[in-house]
Image 1 (tube, one colour):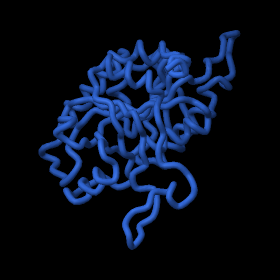
Image 2 (cartoon, one colour):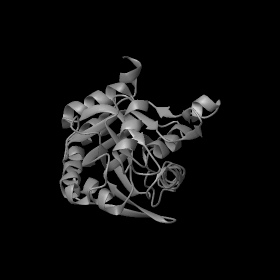
Image 3 (cartoon, helix red, strand yellow):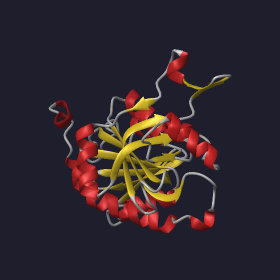
Image 4 (cartoon, helix red, strand yellow):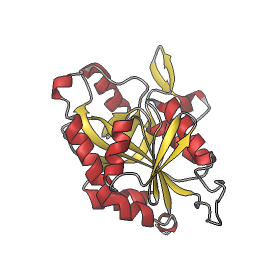
Length: 247
């Protein structure tokens, strides 16, 4: 099965491809470049849900998928069977300490909605859209078991949290949330419109709350991301969606 992995920035993309020994091929797309590593295509799609959604949708619909024209009698690549949003992120510690891994069992748009006199209303309460995607449960369990990751909701935000008050408000609105990042929901929207399952994997680089860059562990998180894909690759490549249909 072919897997599309979407990160925000090149350093995250490169952390993923290191798990496979680096890219075997580079495929140019308008405004981006796929790094192809066997069954895995890894793309740095940009920061934020809008850029992530656009890059994912373009990759899914482009010549990098099954519509790619075959040359010299070679078969065109099969369609993607899975999309993974991957990268580093902030976590609601101490449940998920720095350097640990998280696989999302829910991909949640935490700030998509409206502010009212009574507080924040999610977009679903306004009567349209959706604010959550649920990755295949059997796949979440398998990746968590293979990597030692914690499984729980990962929040997608357009503005990174910078205060204890905001961190507390997010946890109050989304009890049990493990982390926040900026791309998962955008990747999930694009994947859902293409009818492709989605997963989100995050390595923890910092705590959600006041921004103390001296306390961030970006290098450790990137190393953890590489390790995660090294361990999860057989699970991701061999995953069969029927496993979730069977329970």
